[in-house]
Image (cartoon, rainbow, N blue to C red; front, side, top):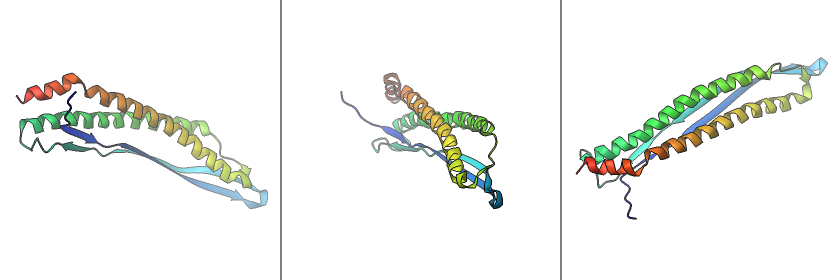
Length: 156
């Protein structure tokens, strides 16, 4: 098979999580509580589209290839929008399940905080993996033989 790459969309979906905690310590009782001050999650996609130099701007092929690559960009936007809501809901449900944050033995506070962090990381990882799997399927569905043939036919 002879293959030629006319365009490429490059980019990844980046997910970041930051949890801030507050500890209340009652030294005399050797007890303390851990509270979640904030839970911030950011999901970002920064796509870059490359078009082969054999298809300069203004040509039919450049436009056709760009239209194809923008399908990839749009799928990433749809995935990010979908999973932003899914992750937000899942983390809210996890927050509701966490319940009380103490009192604990003062020497356990760091471990309790780490366990809470891990609990939220597990939820985030689950949905990040699901998002990446769905993204892979949806991106592959765009790259069909029929799609490539239609790009070529548009500019004959």
